[in-house]
Length: 327
Image 1: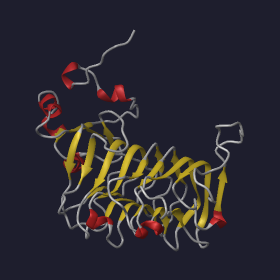
Image 2: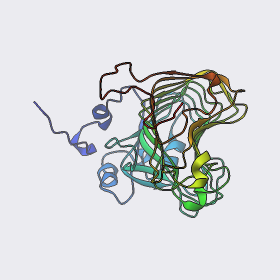
Image 3: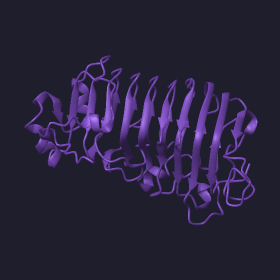
Image 4: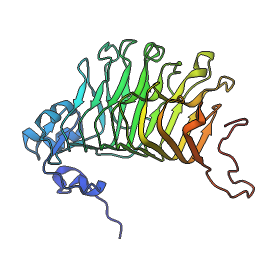
């Protein structure tokens, strides 16, 4: 029998049960847009100190090391000027809504005119947190150049869209980054999307940057990197870049990774990943799809790839890429 669930709080149904969240959080904190039906439902059914209109407010009231969880309802939440630093260990963020990648119904964004901060609109410095089913969308000016910074250990991101630049001034700015991993070890990304297709990005504006701090054991499962690159200046853009002295510790593992260039004119093609021979650790790909790019990695010395499949039947994948002359 198929049951029709009403996830409104007054229906007596715990939305976390429907989402399959079973990690046993001690307290739930609800975040909903103030002028929404979700807020109207919640204000009559949950305590006032458990209902907020921004994630930053909820974070202030959460307690570290006990599994407190913020349930974020559909809507757009603007974090202006001051970055949100998620600094409390074992405090989780769950999007209560349908799962999407691009154009996600739950969006955390910054103001169109925000010129600060330069190190990240959202900074994850806490450890052992689960962030699920949400979008970090970047706007801002040429001075607001980083979307998400991740420095904590043992973090898990599932069904999260890490947007790159949605403003032409920011997209062309020096040092523009979508997501920066720096000193974040044992991070896991499942079904996440990096980038977007709205604004062309220039050479500096990588979708994911791996910094100098040791990022030991990175794991990416069924993740997509998407860019809109078709101008001359886009040719040296990277979906993923590593800084000169990047340290992967042991390895970065990619399973079913997909790198997709959606540019209209495919004559200016980037590398998917830029790195150097000095990179510490290895990159291992267990199946990879490359569309509209020259190389998977521009320096193959520490890169290992297992092909998508060995079935040579007509219609099956016989090579790693969907464009000729790829390595």
